[in-house]
Length: 121
Ligand SMILES: [Zn+2]
Ligand SMILES: [Zn+2]
Image 1 (spheres, rainbow, N blue to C red):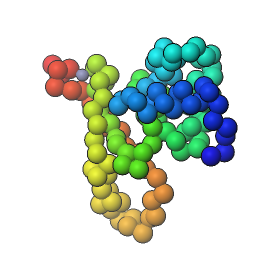
Image 2: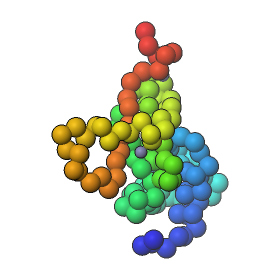
Image 3: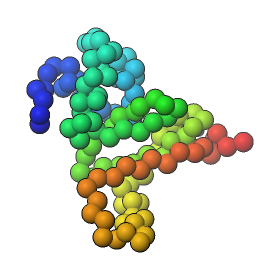
Image 4: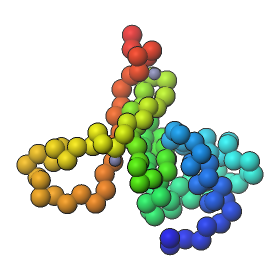
């Protein structure tokens, strides 16, 4: 790890670890027991992303972060109610590479956006 695990960083990582769903900076800010600056939350999330500790997805241009684990998951995001549903990573199929099977994947991102059954009219 390139950075020092300060108290605030530890609190944010613990929070992300305990939550089963991606959180945005303001949600993290509200959920933290000890108050730290919102700007600190943003800065630390960027740092976690650079260090590959978290992954990021976007809903309406807002960044949500979730912790990276070896058996990591992806999410389907409802654009109506913003609920999120886990997709196991096994759904990321190397068949997606098509004509580029010689492409060496070092990391990947996958988020599916749409509407859940209760948000479909
Ligand atoms: Zn929905
Ligand atoms: Zn994956």
